[in-house]
Amino acid sequence: QVLLVESGGGLVQAGGSLRLSCAATGIWFSVRVMGWYRQATGKQRELVASISSGGDTNYADSVKGRFTISRDNAKNMVYLQMNSLKPEDTAVYYCNGVPLTTTLDKYWGQGTQVTVSS
Image 1 (tube, one colour):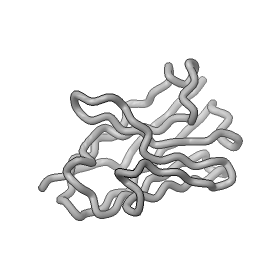
Image 2: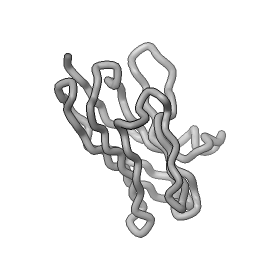
Image 3: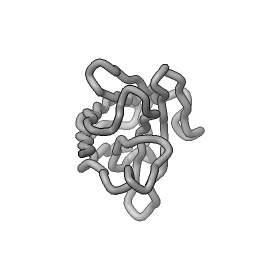
């Protein structure tokens, strides 16, 4: 069974930083591309960063240069370091596999709320 648990969100002022963590089980973690997604109120969920099992990373243009994704395969953990946060980064952040298969789409965690005040 897939279990995804996100943590580390909070309220921060613009320009601040947060580090998100995701604990993943039952997802063939060591061989899977993992990603961080976010969903702002009234908007569709979007992929903001992904990382392959070997450490290759990709970022959405909106976060490039500010966010850094990393993983610890031994601990089945994925992290998202977010710097220079902007109010438009406010959203609930989730981790999951990439690409988002029909199966994985059934196993979203509770997410972690990030709120950036101006």
